[in-house]
Amino acid sequence: MLGNYNYTSNAPTSSNIQTQQEKYVEEDIASIASQLPSCVESKENCRYDDVGDFLESRVREAVIHEPLPCVPSHRRIPHSKANDWPYILHQREIPPQDGSMTALMDYNAMLLPLYRNTEDGGITSDLDPVLLDRLTGRFHSYFTDEDVDRVEYLSISRTSNLHSCKPRFKFYFGTTPQDFLGLSLLDENLKRIEGTDVAVNVDKWLLADGQATFFDFQIVAARSTMDNPLRDQLFMFATGHLGTFFMPIDIRRMPPISEGSSSSSSIMDLPWESKLSSRPVPPSSEYQYGDGIQIRFMDNPGLVPRRSYFNFRGVDRGKNFHVFESKDGDALMEVWPYGKDNAHHVTPIDFFGTKFEPGTKFEFFVNRTNVYAKGHRYEIKFENLIKSKAGTPKPSFINVTPKHERPYKKYRGTSQLIDMKLNNTDVKVGISHTVHGLRHENSTAQRTYLSQFYAFLPYAPFETVAVTGNFCFKHMDEHDTGYSAQWISQRPIANRTSPNLIMWDEVRCPRITFATGMAEMIGNGGKDVIITYGVDDCYSRSIIVPKKKIEMLLLGTSNAPNASKKNI
Picture 1 (cartoon, rainbow, N blue to C red):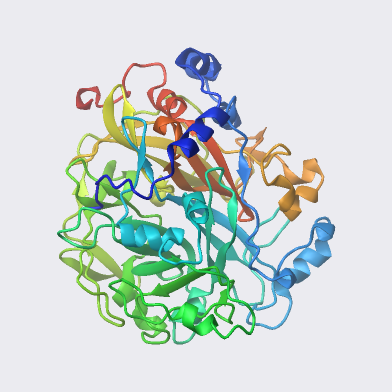
Picture 2 (tube, rainbow, N blue to C red):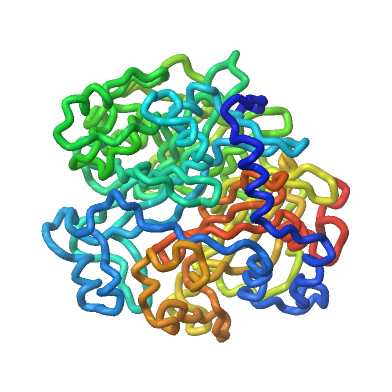
């Protein structure tokens, strides 16, 4: 169980909530309906970018996530070099071979809200007070109540020297790939709180050989204690070249460490109230940029060799798995959203544990077995896999679908899952993605990403009840909050927002839009969703979308999902 319990003593004050509501201009249903793309109502082919325009029309300004300040300037592209292509290429292959001097980009962010909205319009938290206080800083006397109350979201991102800041950029070079887990704390406006950002080289800290293994990250809060109704432990999913890994993780906000301060070591050695006993990553070191957040993983560095790590912490050879809570409060992991075997694949996941000792196995899937497949590689067989039975509904609106790059792996999950209602029925909603364009085809740019919303019922067998047509998210815009902080903003607009070719048509979409994050926004009665996505493996952008818009896209012209109406 992930946990569902009201805890209000550390929630943002009512004045904070009122401020949020005053800043937001609420749309009524008729206003939103009048903006619904005409192609949906007329049942004509919808352009992918028209649907993206609909999501962003008449809503709050989008947010461009600013680069993490903790990363040193010599590992960034300066604004003055935004149009110096030879310089940018050189910053990807600059010696030494280990990649330690190459330029880094922050992208594929997701947000973990520390609070949630209640049905009566209030705000509470499902996090255990100890965990919540660690994240906000309340546990430490250095932080004032004002400091603590500003914190509303934990941002998780990928900081990497592998990027595709287009146009005409090749992805792989001779230097070693370097990926960091990026963390920061955000306020109610999704603005980073000063001094609360770090970037951790997980490969270098955890693995005996330090080779590139982990790159995309997501963090969830879950119940790990049977008699505690609150979520008391953080867990990290890390996608890597060997597959997806999963492990407990501790994170806490820390005061700044003054250079040469005699109290530096005592600050970092403060005791943890946690089930982990491993060593924390040293701040401002070869393993971590920044000191405003302290992190420790389940394992101590070098304890488990890279070649054995998948056996200890592996989930599966695939990626893009997401955790959710059923209507009965059980914790489950979504393996495939739909499309594979024409079914939704879900498996139970067990977060419970008394201690998470370094180097020990953590059996988070009941009766899980390793099997040999695809040339003697280990894969995971989920013995308790739950498959939906009613098939996949037809898309709620029509558009032409290009050829899939990997037809047997299409419709992968992308984002977190949120709670919504369709026609007053409780559902879980996520965003899936497909990758299109074949090397020998000239109708669609190779590796073009398209997205779909999908909804499923929150109880077994978790039937998929609605799926939208394909759409794409948008490029950055001059009016976005944080726009000027990104070096790519200095490029000419034709270069920065270059169109993409899909089915012989130029559309106003980036080639890569990867929606890693979807979370209910804190405040405004829970009516809005924050969708956070990476653009061209270059930067992250968040848009605030009314749930009503997503509901209307899922329903299309019908009053219920196109398939399985009997389910709702």
